[in-house]
Length: 79
Image (cartoon, rainbow, N blue to C red; front, side, top):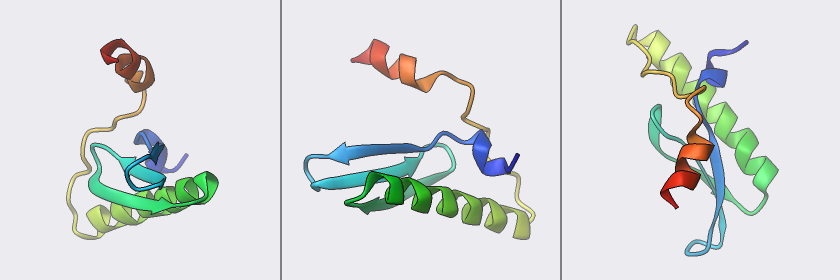
C-alpha cells in the first residue's frame, strides 16, 4: 500500500466557489478544485503522493497519519 493511503482525503462541494474542493488535512494546506468530483479526487491523490515524495527527498519526517481516526463520524457529531 502506498503511503498516501494513510492520509484522509476530503472532496466536498463548495457553494461559495461552485465547484468541488479537495484537501488533505494534516498533510498540507490548500488543495485542488474542479467541476468533476472524481477528477478532483484523482488530482488530490496525485498531490498527496507528490507531497510525500518531497518530504522524503528532503529527509523530513512525515506528519502524523490521519487515517483510521473515524473523522466522518466525528464531523457528524459536531454538526
